[in-house]
Amino acid sequence: MTAEQQRKLTARAAVLKALAHPTRLWLLEQLQQQEHCVCDLTDGVNADISTVSKHLSVLKQAGIVRSRRDGKQIYYRLETPCLLKMLSCVESVIEKNAKNHAELV
Amino acid sequence: MTAEQQRKLTARAAVLKALAHPTRLWLLEQLQQQEHCVCDLTDGVNADISTVSKHLSVLKQAGIVRSRRDGKQIYYRLETPCLLKMLSCVESVIEKNAKNHAELV
DNA sequence: CAAACACTTGGCCATTTAACCAAATGATAA
DNA sequence: TTATCATTTGGTTAAATGGCCAAGTGTTTG
Image (tube, rainbow over all chains, first blue to last red):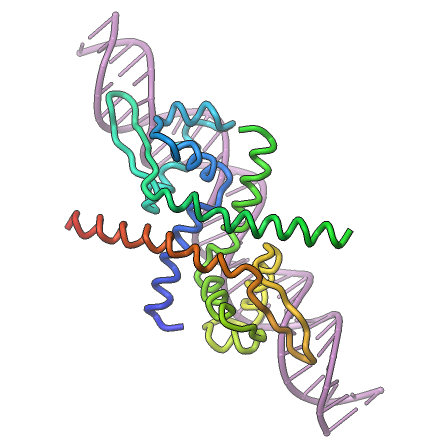
């Protein structure tokens, strides 16, 4: 593995890492159709608003969402919709796992 | 977020988490064309063989790869090729980030 | 301008992750 | 059956993550 390869793979891993949390995946689903302020999003998650804010900042840091201020609120929107589509493959892994597991029983 | 949603999202996050490491992404690339034994894979990675073995076990646990023994060696193969294809979207996030960053300079 | 509102940030703590080394396991070769 | 090879597993340690609370920042409202 060359240094250049290492660099590329680390960048990819960083994006995947940002996606790899149930709350963050839920946030992205909410942002799929339209932008939302943090307060909207906090309502749906069973967590402190500061926790939600930090999750959003992880997604922003990774370049997955963007934010804009409008008055008191800050609105987040999904920057790269393909990310959610790509989850269909993740889903197929899960289904296959379930099937394999069922066969073992 | 219902308990059922939570369950689903946690399962997805688990698969993404397994992908979210540069070494594991590299391993998957190697397995894309053909199966390899652990020794093959260790050669390319700058890490202890036990480290590589543990990375492979993370991928296996997530249902992303499978293994079979042949004599002394254990061969791993990619179970879900679509996972690597889906990285094109991850790549587009990275490119967009680079572009945005360039604009700021 | 002070109070209230919507968020973000810093601090703290518990848990998880990743790396290495050493020891254990499983299979073949001597 | 002992030695050797290929890999996994256990133990340890350092660093990263995720949660909450409290304090700080930026905006609007009274």
